[in-house]
Length: 237
Image 1 (cartoon, one colour):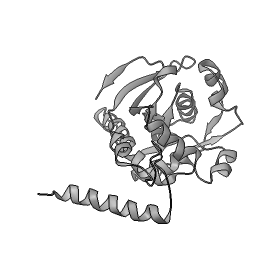
Image 2 (cartoon, rainbow, N blue to C red):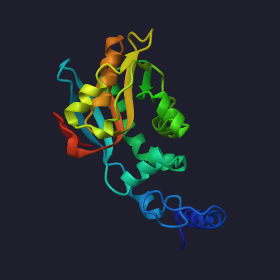
Image 3 (cartoon, rainbow, N blue to C red):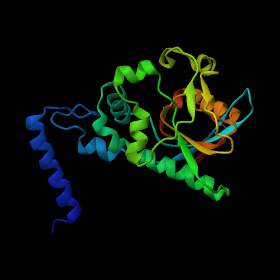
């Protein structure tokens, strides 16, 4: 006997077939024709949340962080399509594993005794990046989770493209890029981002917010790239 879940899944597949006739498309993850995101790629987006601690060698501050997945295929291709090819239609699928990482960080903060409102903050997009895409990927992703990010940071200067830089160059490039907005003293903050490579962006966000008087509880990210990342602690949830 067919279960309700199987029936709904079959119904979605038939709807995707019909839509593909009118709007030819390929899977954002594997390139399969006639699918925005095929079942195999969608099913691969399962969070296996793990804990890290980022360490700022300048301030000696630590930043607790939970991430949902390692950046490998097909996730890498899906994120690339989302961020660089305008495929905002995959935001909902990507938001599901991110939601798990955000929940883990939120729960850790509450278990540590944090009370009151917690603000979710994302790294601000540059004007050039926003003009090029027409949207901020991380803002769209967090909104797909059901959260509206709070604007507590602003960009103070331009920076080089991080993708062209090595690990230590990234930290130097990011230093002093952000500044906290006025009136944030005492606010509890959790940072959120899509992909973390070295942690330079997260640490710069944390530095700026702490300088403005905010209490930075930690961070949550969708995925991290283990090649260039060094942490001080690791736990599997």
